[in-house]
Amino acid sequence: MPPANIGYDDTPFLPGSPYRVHDGTRPQPRVIAPPSAPGAAPSDAVILFDGSNLDAWESVNGGPAGWTVENGYMQVAPGSGNIRTRDHFGDCQLHLEFASPEVVRSESQGRGNSGVFLMGLYEIQVLDCYENPTYADGTTGAIYGQFPPLVNACRRPGEWQGYDIVWEAPRFDGDTLVQPACVTVLLNGVVLHNHTQPIGATNHRVVGEYKAHPPVGPLELQDHGDLVRFRSIWYRPLKRYDEA
Ligand code: MG
Image (cartoon, rainbow, N blue to C red; front, side, top):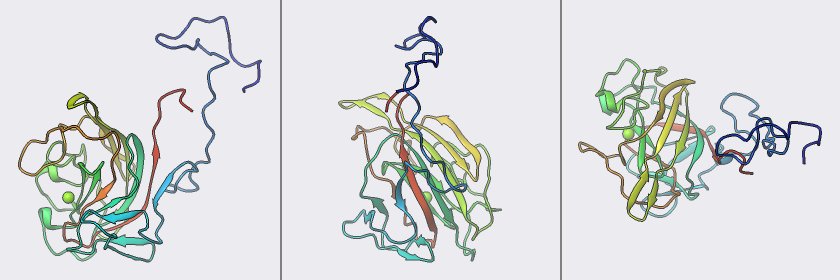
């Protein structure tokens, strides 16, 4: 309990809230230890990949994840298929880092293609768009096939880049969508999407649509045949105000 001498008990109630302005009884924000460095995990994060193994992951085709792990990162093993977390989760703050292949072999969508599929369905594009034009809604950080990133903030191929994503899962009542998903995305600390509502699940050459699904799902990473690397993957479940 907070000390009795903080706050007020004679102020008006906030609209729609059980608490008054400056309410001394309003729950204290949880104390967590912040990251030791940019990109590191705070104390309440769920670690999905710390650079050592793929124990938290599985192949979407069944069985263990077939990607390689060395030097603190995982790398796509082309042809082995997408991988996904065993853990399923919904609203979250997600952090991950990726590096495109240093050796450039192709162009447009053929250059360092992978993807971050939130709940296994909604793709934030991973691509090497450093001096590599492609269709706008397929650019690095695009909500693929729907919204281009606000800017192209790509580093050079081979350099580590960071995604920070705030995700609100869509809400369904039975088969009916009652609230679309909502996502905020930063690449290398730069805002690419500001509280944007995806049109639906990701698809190719058609307009994405929502189809009812559970309130939680896995994080999925795409094997698009390119040697893309990932490291430092963690998330924090997001709660509402005053929820412990
Ligand atoms: Mg992709």
